[in-house]
Amino acid sequence: MNNKCHLLLLLMVFLLFGCGERSQLVYDPPVFKNKYQATTEIFNDSFIFTTCKKILTTEEWVILIDHTMDHMIHLFDKKTGELKLSTGTRGNGPGELIAPEEFSLDRKRNILYIHDSAKRRILKYALDKLICGEKDFFEEILIGEEIIDFVTIHFLKDSLFVANGDEHQLNIITPNTIVSSSSEDSCTEPFESQKEWNAFVNMYAAKSVNPSGDRVVNATMFGGVMQFYRLSKDLDNVTFYKSCYFYPIRGQRTSFNFIPNEETTYGFFYIDSTDSYVYATAFGIKNPVHTPTTIWQLDWEGNPVAAYETGYHIANFTVDEATNHIYACVYKDDEQVLAVIDLNNK
Image (cartoon, rainbow, N blue to C red; front, side, top):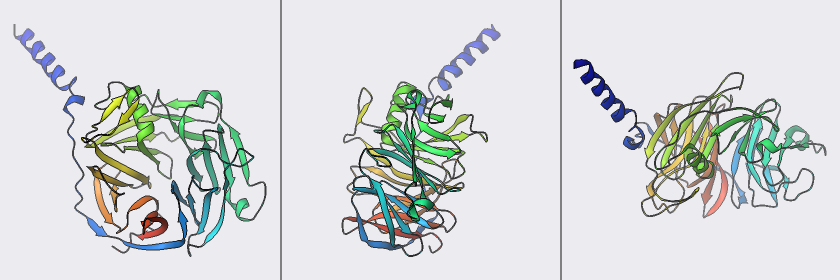
């Protein structure tokens, strides 16, 4: 009789804590004990962007991408802020761009990788050749049928990339084959299947890969959920290791689409990362009227470290770990311009 009672008790505990995990999620907005007023200076206010999509840095250059302009890629001198050149012409010709989705760098070789979904290609821009005016600065790599539907293809090393997909959230790929895929159960409420969750993240989340290429973070723009992944040293395995639940995801779901409503809390707007930290802009409110002015700093477990107030509404940014500067596209008089935020002077 006692054995039966023990079995019944164990079964009740399993049902309570094992099956009810997702329905009992606790959302905990981050609290930053360290808050700083960061020194922010306009780096170049003569070049006005339409919609800055991404910022990257090398040792010498700040690279800004605006996919709405006739020339989408702009290189600025990292010391002076002066525009060096613009490239990435819109079109279907050799080296031209139609619908670029992701930009990433091979910093060792100074190569800019561009995933253009409309051309079904990955373009390689050799920056050193480009700056010297050489005509053979670009190479186009055709994407194989097996990975055509993947999004945000990001360079890792050699010929390996990481990409988001519907069947698996993260995939390590070559331009032609799938090397490995994450086998996680990272689905969260209100989604009922991993495939629905993956589709939501692919459409409504920001992604960042750290410079060493061994960690990835996704952060949702509706609600506020961060999910963390590790990539093995040989890049043959992807492991989901943690979710952080800051704000619940509330809104209207229709098939694989999501429509925000009056109950929707807006979460992350943009994220970037170094090997030590994750940096993010986030709303944490309903019905925001402008982009955030504060940059969050979190560790790779999602724990809050510091918050940096910049005084400017931020479109996007990148963190230069070597100089401890953040290069950002900010709004000045309702126009997007390049700024630099000095984390050394707080």
